[in-house]
Amino acid sequence: MRASAAHLTRYESRPDLDSFLPDKSFLVLFSKKNCFFFRKQGKVGKPSCKEGSKRMALELFVFPPSPRAFKVMAVANHLGLDWTLRMVDLTRGEQRAPDYVSLNPNMRMPTLRHDDYVLWEANAIAQYLALLRPESGLLPADARARLDVSRWQFWDLAHLEPAYTPFIFENVVKKIVGAGEPDPAALARAAEPFHRTLHVLETQLRRNRYVTGDTLTLADFSLGAAFVHAAASRLPLDRYGETQRWYAGLAGMPAWQKTLAMTNVANKEAA
Ligand SMILES: N[C@@H](CCC(=O)N[C@@H](CS)C(=O)NCC(=O)O)C(=O)O
Image (cartoon, rainbow, N blue to C red; front, top):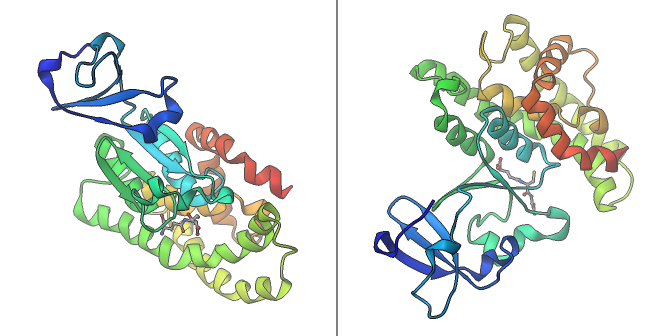
């Protein structure tokens, strides 16, 4: 696509983006609707449009082994969105790099950037992605159906994540970061809240094919991410047949498989 200088509204240097363009001296130019990269030629302010290439608009800043990263990557893959993975390697402290902190002051991932729009919190990002493809039904148009999806996404943060985190921390994360052996006392303490939480999910899935009913929604992506590392985390799932049936269905989806392939670092490390 070509742009003429007359359509451009402003330009700026972006040295922070050096890493993904071979020429380290370039400009980003913004027209009303688009953003283009140009190599500098001669004086600043006189870019050659022939050198331009359109900016990759939708970016997900993620550490792929994390279930929170999985949620947003799997939704983007399922929707067939054209997105770019920007690695935030938590093992190297990249979440604390100033450029990244300017996007996400929590110093955590994931973060979405879509042109100039920045959003953090995995479940909010999943909702944003679903709204890019409303016809997918992942976030239903009907208010009560949509609230049911949101309800389970809130439940995910409030109940499911705290319930499984000790298992993934003790059995997976510690190995990755070299923090020693799993602590049996911590795992024993985690058992009761885990089973109390899983009982709620199991009961819901006894009545429904998917979390909120007969159709796949964001609730399945948000909650399903908890089970991506179930084996490596040694989640005690034996008594939860409906949860296993539901998760096997999710794991069979092409987008789930594609996303799993991006996360296999954690499983390899834990093996
Ligand atoms: N509620 C946030 C939690 C994000 C979060 O805690 N991410 C973790 C990884 S799973 C992180 O980036 N941790 C980096 C750190 O604690 O330094 C979300 O769902 O997006």
